Length: 254
Image (tube, rainbow, N blue to C red; front, side, top):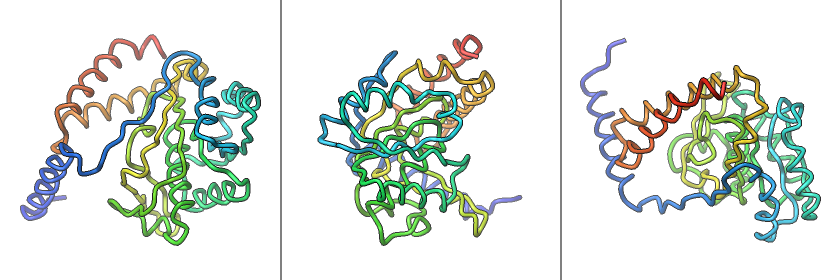
């Protein structure tokens, strides 16, 4: 498919403008608070409690609950006297209906915050469910695009179990619109999680094929970030470090 010179000009102008804005404080970036290192998942409930939160919705999928990866989190939440509800019906490439079901679980459970636990699909589902909680009169379809999430999300704690998408620190979420059979991307700084738990022990029990495919996903993202026309110096540095880490370690991890 050929692309017209005008379309190319529009795209390059957009990329140049976005690169310029990314280098400023226009978005009022706030880096997520990180809990890092082996066993750091056990520190999460105390962090939640310190924010005055008494009930959380855990958004995950049945594959992870079946592997018992959440057991230590449940235990520490109970020890910290924090109530929790579990929504583990997240689908691969979550649909708008999936988002609405998670939102309903949050409201029914009287929750005050969300813990997203898993790969990119639970992360995206949790982000958009939170956006719908905060913006009850704005549908997911109306949020499609850039900067259309009007109000901040409830506190969002992201716990990745793969080293793939990096969704725990991005401003993006993608949902499937089953009516139109289209991908519906939502991009807004308000979707960025305020807190992320990077516990390498959570990746140890994953099936080897998940380790390999998510590792290649991370490599793809790193290369894409490096060659992108809207990146900044920090992006390029992180991308180079990521490529080296992946090449040096992915076979051992697999």
